[in-house]
Length: 152
Image (cartoon, rainbow, N blue to C red):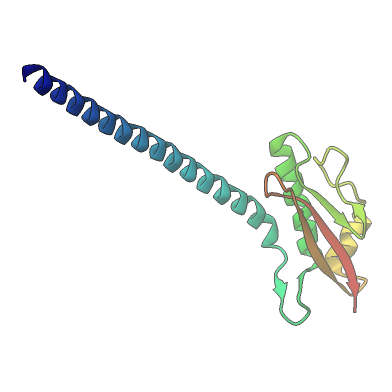
């Protein structure tokens, strides 16, 4: 009788130990997921912030159903891209106007002549500019901004 009561006591303690171990494993796993979710949220916020700094220059036009910008906005985009590229130390973002890159190969400065930039700013060609972006699939960040001249 004494052996059977000791056996039942041991079995009960083993079951309680298994339950406690299960609770600890579950809590540990959920804590890891929680931390990962927070990290993913921070990363998504950083990507959105990175993209928004470029996208603010070209608002969506409901009438034409396109993103459009002015010449001075395009020049501001080029300056911002060179600033970001310089900060990163590599060409992270490129600006293309009418199928030609506007930045130097290293992305650290504007590679177009002053006449081109003046024409954009003064809008001599009486044009508006349709803007689109290319997004990196892995990072979710803008890596190229395409500008197409749209004459009136």
